[in-house]
Amino acid sequence: MAPLFTHVQQLSPPGQLGGLSLNHLARLLDEGFFRGTFQGGEKALGMAVRSALQAYGASGESSCMLDIFKLLRDPALQVK
Image (cartoon, rainbow, N blue to C red; front, side, top):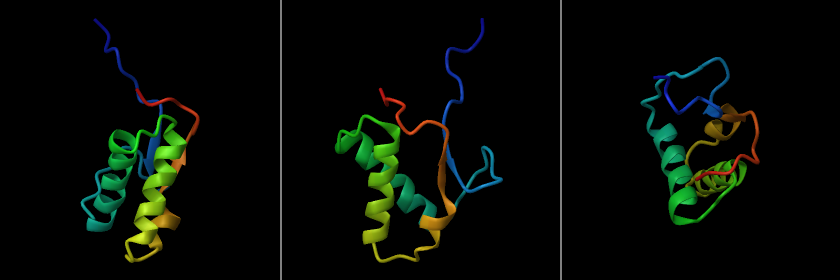
């Protein structure tokens, strides 16, 4: 039987398709995404990513991550 899930969206640095990042700054961005989605109630993927980027920007960490990570594909995708 074929899997029911497929890769439809990606938030990553350019050229790193499905790569693993262990950088502590990437972890802060990741945590902001999950907080925005599951605690903040963001339903559109683009809004959850925006929430994560804003939270990261307010953290006082290096702004390099804001330039590196990009959402590829449709920001209007509904998170369920």
